[in-house]
Every structure is written in structure tokens, then in C-alpha cells.
Length: 156
Image (cartoon, rainbow, N blue to C red):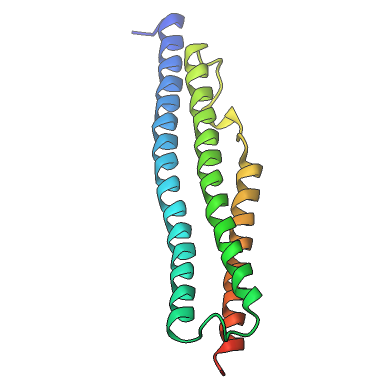
């Protein structure tokens, strides 16, 4: 028994629907996982750097006797900026994934238009990449300043 054109079209649309739903589920899982892992990692590292530097000042070198204390202040400032950037990054990542999910849902509602979910585009990928690079740069600069401050004061 051969299928009618309507049955073939229905099966084609069903496959596309299944692809869109699979993509939606995968993107939602990615959204949740990325937010948790990345932000947790950077927050932990930046906050740990604050803690280590405070311990260094309290236990090893007093701030009054420290050489180049401006380096420590700049390192703290960069760590604080890193934390703020990561909060912003969380919002951007959520927004990007939310737009992608909205686009998947809109294509499902429009009858799929014969498009694959892979054709939906990448919303804000460049802006998210820039923010992540900026976060890495401020964190790295903060760590380098902190290490240089420690190096300048370890010989006291």
C-alpha cells in the first residue's frame, strides 16, 4: 500500500517537529548547564583570589608595610570587575538561549517551513564570546597583579 501525498507530508512535518523538539530540549539543557558551570568556576576562582590575598595581608605582610600596595588594590578591583562581568555573562547567556528557544518554538508554530533547527542562527554568540574573553582577561590580569604583589612583598 502506498502512502498518499498528505500522509507523506504529515510524516515529513512530524520528523521536522521531532527535530525541533529535540533541539529545544538540548538547548534548554545546555543553557542550564553552561550557566551553572562557567559562573560557578569563575566566581569560585575570583572569590578565592580575594580570600587568599586577604590572608596574605593579614598573616604574612601587613598592609602598612607592603610594597606596591596599589598592585593589590588594582588586583582586587579587577577581581571585582570579573565578578560583575560574570553576572552580566549569565544574563547574556540566558538571553541568547532564550531567543534560540523562542525561535525554535516560533518555527514549530509556523509549520516548520521546511527548515531544520540548525538553520535558526546563533543569537548573540559574538557578544557572549566577547564577554567571556573580557572576563578571562580581567581575571588573568587580576591574578598576575596579585602574584606580582606577592613577589614584591615576599622578601620583606
